[in-house]
Amino acid sequence: MTRQPQLLLGKVRSLNPLTIVSTQSHRGFVTTALITATLADLLAGKQATMANSMERGELHNKTIDYKLEREERVQRRINNLKDTRPMTPNYEGHIPLYTTEKVLLFAISGIRSFFHPENGLNIVQLGEATAWPMFLESLKRTMLSDPTGRRILRDRPNVTTQQLEMDHLAEYPEGTFGYQFYKWCKRENVSPDTRAPVSYIDDPLHAYIFKRYRQCHDFYHALNDMPIVIEGEITVKALEAANMGVPMATLGAILAPLRLKPIQRKRLYDMYLPWAARTGFTCKPLINVYWEEVLAMDCNELRKELGITLPPDLRNMRTERREKIHRLNLKYKKLKEESNFA
Image (cartoon, rainbow, N blue to C red; front, side):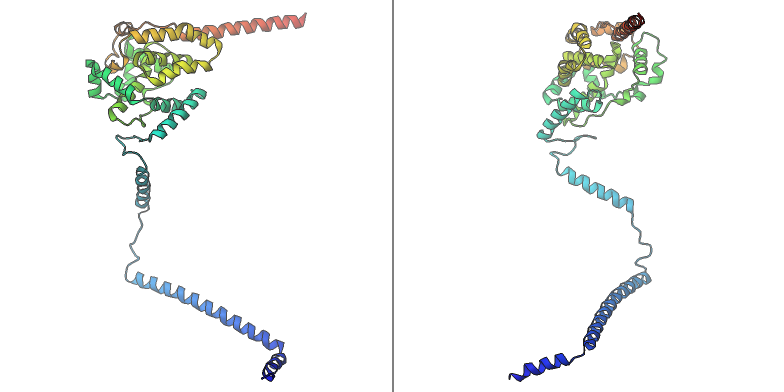
């Protein structure tokens, strides 16, 4: 029993090292050959299968509609997104939001509007975030109580360059509201087509009422010859707040002046905000004016019919202010040169 391990050990010791290396090499060659054969068989089998399919005509004429596939993929994503919304869209372009999302929209757009009022998107989002159903319902009652307002709700006019025939307005007689509106748009480099569509208001009728208010904003500017500068915008917003109770306009009239220069705030507080408040409270509800039908009217007659008196000319006041500063700078420069020469 004790001799068998010794005999085996002796046999192992008697083996030639070259024999061991040769055996290992042979095994490695065999393993590599087996792997290569297996892969070749798989590839050959796959190609044979493909060749058989081609012979049967299963691969020829088989095309993939990549455009259709992409559209289906996009549609699946849209459907998945719809499933996460609180409701299905109520009209084209409607984006339903949860209450928490509306609060976030109000907070973010409010902060952005305060620090960057020059960005129209901030104002647009703040306007819709603050267009609460109670306000829009009140505006709807105002329109339903007036024959012209009811007609506007029935006709649903859309203020666009094409609908207003802007090129034709240039041929209106001077003094008419149509010519005044055309001239104001050219001077301020705007057009009726620049107004953003409504997206975040749920009720379709409320959405149209707010769209109508938004599209008519430039009519108020033109009728009062108010330029698109920060003071002019605040003045028109204050007019809208007093006349229609627009929440966003009220916020703008209160908070926006805080970011102005002292001379601008003084002009607003002394002249333009009092004018806007007085005019807005006493004039006819501007939401009930069918502006498309009064383009041929004389501006003064239209203002008289609506109960509007023109505010002080803001353009002239700003121009006079710039000229005064320029004269003072020249005078200061001249005195400085004389003192240096002396």
